[in-house]
Length: 190
Image (cartoon, rainbow, N blue to C red):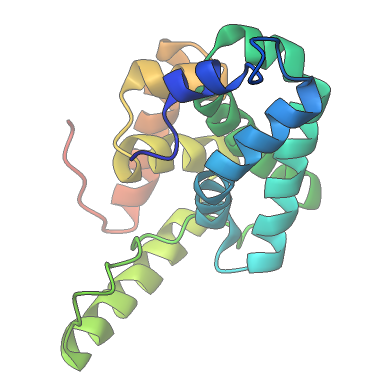
């Protein structure tokens, strides 16, 4: 059973008597279903700083509590949560002017696989190199690269999540690719 099924949220938004549940109960339900996903998004910008990612995650759900009626009316909270998580992380990075906070490249491997020490070393070395390259990008370019190349979002999805035009996404991606190529990173044009 999927934990984050939007249809379940609409169904679960009714109490046993058929009446609507209150906003706080709905936010609690959304939190229980999506907290891990929002945390993972925040961790990608946190450069391994769990406390920072938890702080961002908390900010996202506090914003949900304030906007619960609006988000609830849309019927699909994950898209809103994802966009707000990216925006909260970018805003915190800008506000603090912390260049070292960004996405960790390698996603967690399933526990069933156990890579060799050499494979782990190579992966960690590659991740460090990518982290250093991405760390030098401005926050908006970094967000576009993270969403499109690491989260496999389309240009349209990236624009919607960041609240900018598709043209702006294209320009930010092109600038990021140009910067990374200047540092000997070869990216395909796709």
